[in-house]
Length: 200
Ligand code: SF4
Image 1 (spheres, rainbow, N blue to C red):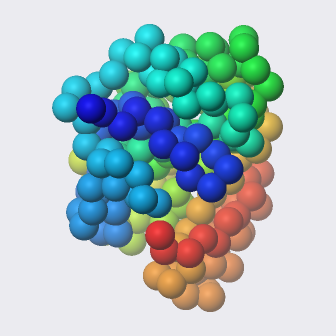
Image 2: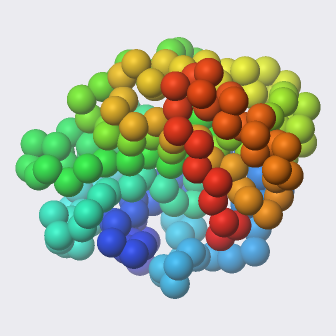
């Protein structure tokens, strides 16, 4: 049995892929099969759009405060499928939709992608992780190399044009006060909101 949807607090999370171009040093997948007491999030295969929608319906998705695309992998690896699922949710409910992402969608998909989110995604939460390209690469170990940081910032800047809420996150325990101040400045320049989050 595959865990396609799983509840976290008042939200329902969607686990569509295990693919990811990064190998973050803090990635939860390294030490665990699950998060927040979920069933294992490793997928035997990627569920179809139909299977994801069926899983949402079985989980009674309309009762949740938010649907969050976030699992054991980078959701934008399946951006078009994700947006089809978002369309299904939007057509049938008013539940807000968030994507938690590493922000490398443009590199993954080989094109500018933020515009596609317009009208379907309410919040994008992007892991900022570091405040310069060298430190960023050291933390996320992206297969796209040193250009990853700039491309992630560019995607964020684009999202601000098409998505109502754009949030960037850094982890409190692994960033200094100085780095958090730099992160705040980066977010202000891009038009995003900084969230300093605890290590999960
Ligand atoms: S981007 Fe997310 S899924 Fe990918 S390695 Fe980093 S923490 Fe893990």
